[in-house]
Length: 290
Image 1 (cartoon, one colour):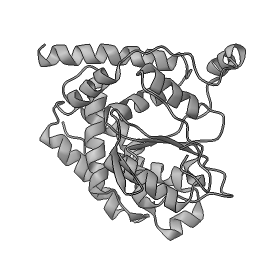
Image 2 (cartoon, one colour):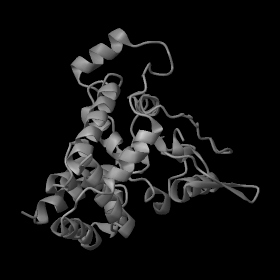
Image 3 (spheres, rainbow, N blue to C red):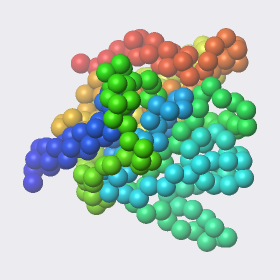
Image 4 (cartoon, one colour):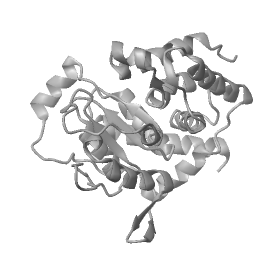
């Protein structure tokens, strides 16, 4: 197949994947799109939201629609089990960090590679603090994206209430095989990114490092993550090239959890909302390439 034909084929499969997910996670098409982009980017996803809005349901549906195995690990203070990731101790977080960053685990001095494709979807409750251990910046930086599901709209919630099933796992049929997913992840790397868009990404990053309310800006790993996610977004939408809008749509979910507010700003209000607001302000300031 030619490059355009390969992109069109991949895009059609990804649309089927999104349709399967949207049938389970109702009224959250943008959340579904971001999770698929994260998966294609070989990234890990952090979902920060209140209980009961479908975080684990999304993870289950994503694994089953790609015909992959899924393990729900309930984090506690004494074992590596990654629901509510901020409930597990720093030692356990460190073990998880190895799996996320190096695609391997070490047990009794023996290293085992992780099977591919491999993705961590972690959740945490932003309003509950008792018995939690905040994730350090080094671990937050390993998540490609942080997203919020949010409450459903009225029509979607009506469907959820009327047709919810008692089963713990969503009834999702495989749409893509693991081998097909790995091939699409490789295809993402071939999506064209103009030099002007690379400069655009770096200009946004530079502004985070100079902002008066931020004690720590975006790392080079974060810049690489936005580049890769923009390539994945293009493939999902059937293009073999990245647009400035891909970068603008992804900057907040890819960057907001990587910046650290200075102490004065943290005392005033919640960090999640402020970091997202600052990123949106920066996006308005940085000139978009033509």
